[in-house]
Image 1 (cartoon, rainbow, N blue to C red):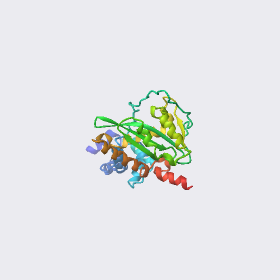
Image 2 (tube, one colour):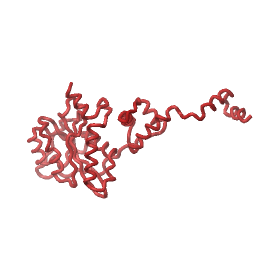
Image 3 (cartoon, helix red, strand yellow):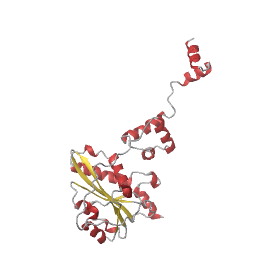
Image 4 (cartoon, one colour):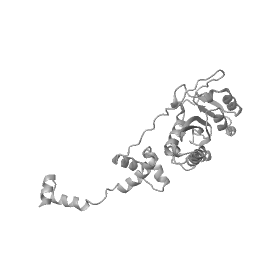
Length: 269
C-alpha cells in the first residue's frame, strides 16, 4: 500500500518504482572516478584545472579522458580557485646609467626551437615571517627551468648568480621586465659578454613576460613553502620542485611530455 501511495504521489508506474528500488543502493557510475579526481584536486588545494588533473592522473598510472575529467569536476562542483596577482610585485625606480631594451620577444611565446629564447624574472617566497626571493630563467619553447637562484635579499647578486652558467646559450635571447636588476648596467654588460640578446617587456605590462609568470604561479600552488622553518629547508623544497618540474611534471601543451622530454623531442627532430 505504501508503495502504491508513493508511486502515485511521484506520478511513476509501479514497474518504474521497482526498477528504481532495485538500483537505489548502487553507487553512481562516476563515483569511483570522482574519488580519484577529487583526491588529485584536493591535493592541489583546489587550484588544479581539468587539464592538470588529467596529467596528474596519468602520472599516477590512471588513464582518464580530459573530457570525462572536466565533466566529473563540473558534475561534483569541483571549482578551481583562480590565483591572485602578486601583491608584492615592485616597480623599483631606475637610477642614472640604467636603460631599457626593445621588446624583441613581443609575446611570441610559441618558438619551435628550444634553448633559443628565455624568460626571466624574480618572485617573492614568504616563509616563517620573512621573505626570500627566487630568480629563474625559463626556456620559452620547452618550459624548462634552465637556471635559478634563491636569495635572502634583492641585491644584484641574486640575478648575476642566476645567469652565471648561461654561457652555453650564445646568440639566444633573454627576456625580462623593466625591473631594477634587468636595467642595471652590470646585468646588461654580462648579457653582452654571454653573447646573448636582451629583450624587455613594456612598462607595467606583465603579460609580455607571461611564461615566467605562469611558472611562478604553478610553483606557489604546488610547493608547501610556508611550512619551511629555515632558509635551508626552503631551498631544498625549491630544488626538489625544479627537478620535479623539469623531469616529471607532464604538461598538456607539451604533447603531454615533461619539459626535458619535450626539449629532447624537438632537438631530435
